[in-house]
Image 1 (tube, helix red, strand yellow):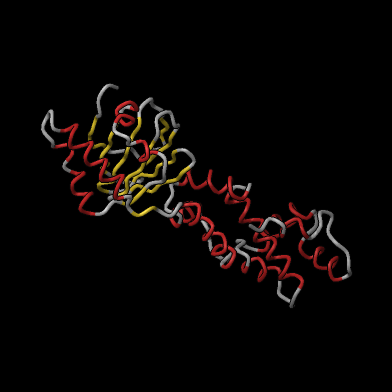
Image 2: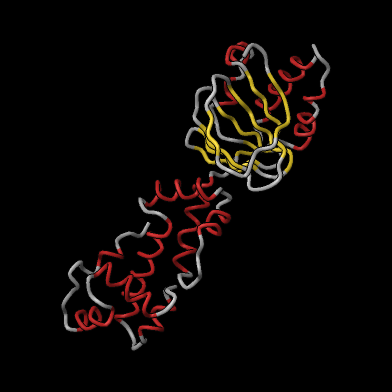
Length: 257
């Protein structure tokens, strides 16, 4: 690539991956685009300027209608204009005035477009914009919310939506953080809570199962036996008599994040 390219694109509702030998900036116009680049997860909506450095493998998808202003920028061009800083930090949300000016870039006349683009990028670099909170922090907020309401029917789609992430990106980030898939983590949390409830009061197995988010006592018993090698009733008797299950009581509770 010898010169910058500026164009409006719409992205599909399926995950795609790409890597290219030039820098790229994505400016959200309408809708949303989920982007993962250089280990950063970015929810690209209106006025969000997201960087993709040359050579970085990145993944993206758009869950609905969207328009994105895409700036493909040669490395040498960016180096000559000292614009490398745009690709060293996280995504940023631009002020509306700068956003409106950016929307006009594609309409600039031939010969003026390079100058207009360079000036706009300088302003974007100087303005800084509001740095976005990494989605990982939203995920960290999600975990205690899930623990506090284990009876809720948690679906991956809902978890991902709460974190403003595409499901595939959310699942990768969740495993990187916890070492488990969302389903595995949730089952362990539910079984850990079940152990606590089985040790106090006289709740029936059905009451414990429903309080912990299992469909019924049969589903609860199957999951519990897979984890502890004994049924919930047997586990309750063992604990009451001072014994432990074969795998030990801590096998579910130690997975807390």
